[in-house]
Amino acid sequence: MSISPPLAFINLLADRNLNLAALTLHVGPGESDDLLALAGHQDFAAIAAFPCVVEADEASRLSPELLLSLQSAGCLLAAGEDIHRADTEVTPILPPTAKWLSGNWYLAPPLKPSGNQSVSRAMALKLMQLVSADADTREIEEIFRRDPALSYYLLRLVNSLSVGVGKRISSFAQAILILGRQRLRRWLNMLLFASRKDDPRSAMLLARAAVRARSIELLAKAVGLDKSGQEQAFMAGMFSLLGVLFGLSLDEVLKPLQISDVLMKAVLHREGEIGRLLQAAELAERGEAGELAGLLAGLPLSVAEFNRLTLEAHHWMLDVIRDNQGGDHVR
Image (cartoon, rainbow, N blue to C red):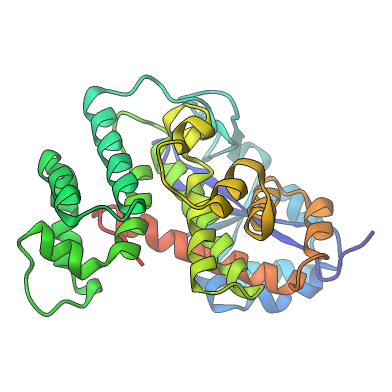
């Protein structure tokens, strides 16, 4: 059945260094002219400038008006040999003719982590456990004292202008108090996926996790969930990829975390309202237009709104990637 307007899907492309380098646009079945308004959206301008890539086969299916609009926004046309796909290679290598790397290679099991990488992520996970359990601030402080990298990033974060603090912060207790538990929890989620030199997947995995988490959060707001529901939706997006990050079963990773039954069922079994939103995000990642359209039909959400939220989530992800270069992103 034709979908009007069509669903718009955005996929991630890496460069030769396995860092996020571009986004590629794919349009589901339907009248492509219905996406003209989307191409003129302010969030799309940021994505097009990243850049956005339209593959030759995709370009041939679009209306001349939409293709011109995409190119005017800054999108690039790519030949077939410009993009190499890899799904199972842990450290794929682009052929000489290719400019970008697509596929799900970064979702493959990780290489054996180095001691420093393993300790750093273990510490971040331990912190997340304590914050989720609403542990005493002194317990949380103790973890920061054991990991110089974590403590550096924490103090850098709270001393940054983005936090809006009028004085310099020099103690962990002050930092934790100013951030608040919700913001600290969100930051720790991001930090888990942040770039690690010994893990070639980490840059792209962070991008995927950020898009998924923000997409579900935005969808939760759009369908009427309250602030708590929106925060749980964000956490569901992040938690759903922890098994990939650690190379363990998701159940095993989540078991030590004291999280709500609603969140646990959403992540492990795709149950409940948040579970359905997680399903929607995953279908979008795979470009499964028919199944996604059927799922959206059962939600108080139009295809046009879903497309707009997809743009917003990817724009937000690009900000995360830029800020992650300094190690201190938090929203």
